[in-house]
Amino acid sequence: MADQYEVSETGAGTLAIPSLRWEEFPESPAVVLLDQTRLPAEEVELVCTDVPALVQAIQTLAVRGAPLLGIAGAYGVALAAVRGFDVEEAAEALASARPTAVNLGYGVRRAVTAYRRAAAGGDGAEAAAAALAEARAVHAEDVEASARMAQHGLDLLGELLPGGGHRILTHCNTGALVSGGEGTALAVALAVHRAGELRRLWVDETRPLLQGARLTAYEAARAGMAYTVLADGAAGSLFAAGEVDAVLIGADRIAADGAVANKIGSYPLAVLARHHRVPFVVVAPTSTVDLETKEGAAIEVEQRPGKEVTEFSLPHIQGGGVVGGTGIPVAPLGALAYNPAFDVTPAELVTAIVTEAGVVSPVTRERLADVCSVSRWR
Ligand code: MRU
Image (cartoon, rainbow, N blue to C red):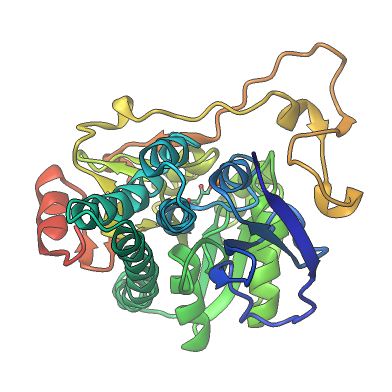
């Protein structure tokens, strides 16, 4: 049974609110999440004391974004192990909660492998401790990866745009809310901001679930960045006006050929960027690279409920609930909807992939495999 409950608003009002943490409550250990469906209006934590609750939080996007899904998956396995539930069953449920972000399976696999290894010695408590230690390692590595990507990305932008004063367009949400650290693409934008080189952060609202308007703008405001939110369809006119110097996005899965699956609306930005000769830069840890998936066409793209498109559902305003749940209809009753959560951008449109282990540019199968081979964490 799903055991998920809310605790009151954190009210902390600082950037330091962790998006996810492991907590040893006296009654039960728990994975505690900042409920991202309620942002920016409310900072409410969701306490998950069992795996079904965590799976539900993943599917409703209370917890989301590739690196954080990896961390959540790993802690989920630890939660099952520490509470004495069926770890293999829990791992299966967690890994299949969403199909596209490869980090989810990566985090689950790391924790379950550590668990199995220790369980072979016959001691359940030791095996649970091993799963938890591995989840903590996945979490800590993401903090370090995030800092490294930020530095590599800052250096790369310095080379690509020697004039400084960058105007960066970003899509979806890639900051501290998706990471143990400061994120992926937004971590680079933050580094640019701290270096005094950010002239403007253009924030795509990111329909249909508004991860840009709700979450990236929330993070940008807290960091004191100069930002402007735009409707996704307005990006073309920004490029045409010469107002974009670079596009920075994250990734949910990168195939061996360098094709990048990311939030729906990323591919059109890549096409625009190429037309306007603007660098299109993807920032992702090597744990997001899936060398088993040989090409972009083989990436499974999550299809989400049509209601997310045909209704406006604003849980952060309507007092909680499920994204895509009871909403205000914006299309005629019975309208069909096309609602893929991600699209796939081919490698030839990607200027560079920034990882914690280095920058891949030009993006080729060989260079991507090389960077993965020097990563400590693969
Ligand atoms: O559906 P979401 O909100 O989980 O999608 C997230 C994204 O598409 C992010 O851009 C991606 O995970 C990269 S985050 C570092």
